[in-house]
Image (cartoon, rainbow, N blue to C red; front, top):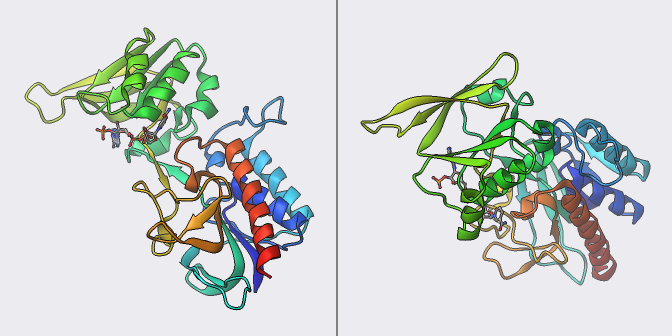
Length: 323
Ligand code: NDP
């Protein structure tokens, strides 16, 4: 029986591990399919406090991992493929939760910290893969700085796309927004900001066919009014291509037990990071959510790290009182 299992190896998971290990919970961290989490899909991290010269994401995640290891965290590669959470505990003892790893091994734990993150949605065109890290990004806050004075495109018409376009307009010479509908889905205030920004040109009713360039993104072929009589292929010259078509939280495996919102984000009370059972009313004893899997709004490494700290402190408090 484990005292504490942490699922996920991003900033939330590793920070939870550091705190849980230092609180003598002897945590076991299950690393998941993407070691180091979503951050490792970016090129350089410049906005995480403590790295004044920026840091290569793998280095930062390895630093966090070693810090967690130093205090006794144990690591296990593999993915949680089934989760069974107990809603009640007997005789005031902690509840027992059961996780299956890679469809084979079963582990039991008194507390579980879910830090499985979210994955940015991509369009699914082959050139996205080809230029990943060479001009294709799904995080303007992470990568925008590398495109200072250049021309970029943002795909999407929601609040995230508008926010990213506004952020990039502060750095870049020009920003195209590629919007598949004849209108933006974003809230009025976000739309207004975009439409009034002289550096942003919104290309309504455009879809991306392919990216072009020698070894890096240098342009994009777009299709205007797909399927209409006036359908037309257009080309834009760009240096960066930012996806902002939403994120998908990695929470599917918990769906039978944990309350999730319409997008799949775990419903937690935010303050103590406690999770609610499916249906949204009962708190699941000893189960906490940290980081992007429960955060549709901020999605920043530093915020995820902070919530990992909170989750571990709450898990410790739970074990102290449930005993
Ligand atoms: P949304 O789901 O709101 O918007 C996604 C956008 O991407 C839509 O315009 C959608 O087009 C477009 N899109 C989706 N798939 C494709 C595709 N395959 N090809 C082209 N375009 C595509 O996601 P967001 O991330 O923008 O927002 C998520 C939530 O977070 C929202 O509730 C939002 O309000 C909130 N948010 C709030 C912010 C704030 O308050 N400052 C900032 C950021 C997010 P279509 O409209 O045609 O479906």
